[in-house]
Amino acid sequence: MAADVDKSTQGEDGSRDPGQIGIPRPGTRLGSWVWRGIWVLFIVGAAPLVAYGIKSYQDAQIVKHHEESVRILGTEGLFLFSSLDTDHDFYLSPEEFKPIVEKLTGEHNPLTNYMFFLFLLRNYTPVDVEEIIHDPNGETLTLVAKMQPLQLDSMTKSKDGFLGVSHSSLSGLRSWTSPAQPSSLFSASQFRAFLPPKNKVDVGATWWVIPSELNIFTGYLPNNRYHPPTPKGKEVLIHSLLSMFHLRPFIKSRFAPQGTVACIRASNDFYFDIYFRIHAEFQLNEVPNFPFWFTPGQFTGNIVLSKDGSHVRHFHLYVPNNRSLNVDMEWLYGASESSNMEVDIGFLPQMELMSTGPSTPSIIVDEEGNVIDRKESSHEPIQFVFEDIIWSSEISQEEALHQIEVTYYPFKKVDYLPFSDAFERAEAENKLVHSILLWGDCNNYIEIIPIPVTIVELSLNEGSGRTLRETVLESSPIMALLNQSFISSWSLVKELENLQVCIFLLEKARLHLESYNFPVEMMVALPNGTIVHHINANYFLDQTAMKPEEEGATFSFTGSFEDPSTSTYLHFLRESLEKAKQYLIE
Image (tube, rainbow, N blue to C red; front, side, top):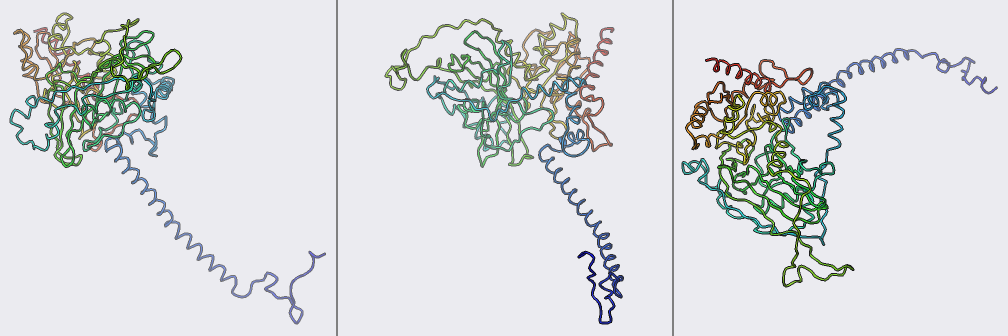
């Protein structure tokens, strides 16, 4: 068989070549071992180099992730993220995010957490891609803008003749004396942005027209900007409205509160009466001057429109002027984010938009659809007669505004009464007065209706977004104790200084002012005005600050989490109750 043929070669003497029958020639085995040794040494030597290369790459990636995270989140934000990221992979799994859910919902039940996630998913609306479709042949309405410039003598800096304030800093403010557009024509369909979602059609329901993007876990938006970002979706209408006052409105303010909230005040089969509130600001300066931010306490108003959004019966937007101070101002002395900043506050007498009448169609057709009149072709305006609207369900304007407040500020579930009313009720109900006294000329303390805008936008640890409002006063245990044992109030220093009422109320105001320290003082008083306990906001925040770099402090959401701010404020209130007993005994 062919497979059995011996293919080895033979020598001349008939012997076979040893190299052909698998017997190594002299020196062949030695050379093979040498080469094997060299390869082994190479592999052994290369392994540490490969491991070092992999380690270097991983370290570089970690550094890259860290730098990117610091850029996006900030130092404290990264610290918070790292406390949740237990496997340090720079991603949060549902299990790692679970403590946040438990903190926000106040529940530790897995089913509750799951339902909370479903709630977020179902209620999330990508505003940036939600475009409002306009009807070119639809109805139109005209809005007129009215404005009286800020009273410069209401600013604190005016008391010393604006000493130390450069002329260029206030150039944008001084030159802004009238609306950018005295009147403007709008399509009625544009105002569909104010229509409620399908699950918010009942009277008293509130919803976010433009959601806030700020919370205790996010930083504030930067100060060193001149031009607002391009508005999208429902932001387009708000931007167009505010652009009638000034050409550079920022629809999303740098600080909380942020966004637009609406509430249905009344409805019938065809119409809604919707109240709304907007928190936005203007940039008044241009290059080469440094930024100057002009932030009204709020824009509020109402719109009466048809449920299909085709007709607007009435529109009104304004900055409330029923308080002595209603605008916050901040200006930089440099182009960088870390530049020095001046702050002041002042009074704006008027800033409002008003519709000249209901929206009307641009064309009129007969029963067969033939055009019989056009708005632009008429020598005389087309005259329409509108019937009065009778509401089938409604609440008061005050109740609608209160619902909006609670949406912005959950801590408003506790009533904050005016100074005099608080002491009257405290005496009637035999309770203590929980009083917050704010510097009247301080950054972001103002509010147009009785509620401090931020109570208070005090920074914690070099600019952290945590505030008393966002932590302590919104805490469920704090609100429960305040509703049970206290009557709450807040006041501006300037208002107490100018108080002109009976002698007994003046004495209460004097006791408050004696205990006050800049910028915010939280106090507890007897119904007769005696201060039984008080704590300064700066001291309070210093005491509750958690710095991971100091004394090996640790911070984690794992296990049972208790906000130190909440526990400290609870201790303050409970201690006040005990001290009040001593006063009553005496």
